[in-house]
Length: 104
Image 1 (cartoon, rainbow, N blue to C red):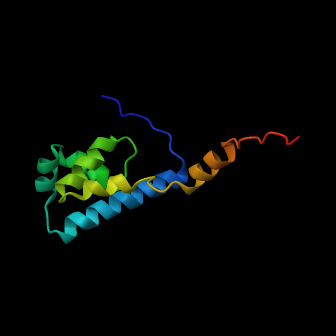
Image 2: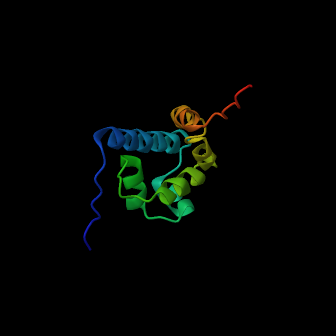
């Protein structure tokens, strides 16, 4: 079986690696084994190791399952893009202002 090839930007790869490291540290702080977390998440240990390395071919749902297996940390995903300042500025620039009627 061939591996999937995903092209990610270097900054995005660094974000994934940081996320993986944070997941690993959360598991270690809770003193949970890879076997237990993988079982709770419904994945193999090899997939958990891929998550902890920040591998970009791992599905987003798998990251969420691992976070959930660590004690409900998947709720943090709701914070992603919650306050989109840049998007709001773009949206505000595209808002049309009503034109006033001319006075006679």
